[in-house]
Amino acid sequence: MNVKDQVIAIIAEQALLEPSDVTLDSTPSDLGIDSLGLVEAIFAIEETFDISVPFNANDPTEGDFDISSVAKIIEGIEKLKAGQAA
Image 1 (spheres, rainbow, N blue to C red):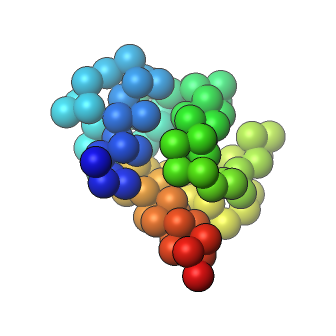
Image 2 (cartoon, rainbow, N blue to C red):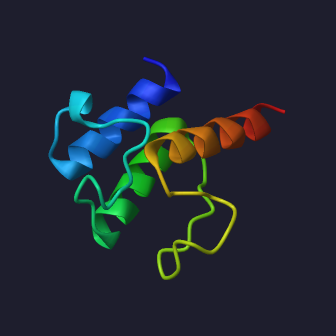
């Protein structure tokens, strides 16, 4: 399973949706994910990929990790994984 599929599965689980219901353009709020669900999704992503996501739960818009859409979350994880491998 690639990064995209794994992230979509994690996000779908948090949103209580099927992975097929999650698109790259979906935002967390589009999917009904509240701030607690977002934090839980970030924790699951960190555990799955063994990375540390620079995410501020108190101010999600602050920082370098863009959570505005599923595509941006995937892009951020791929960058973190690439940095970890370097």
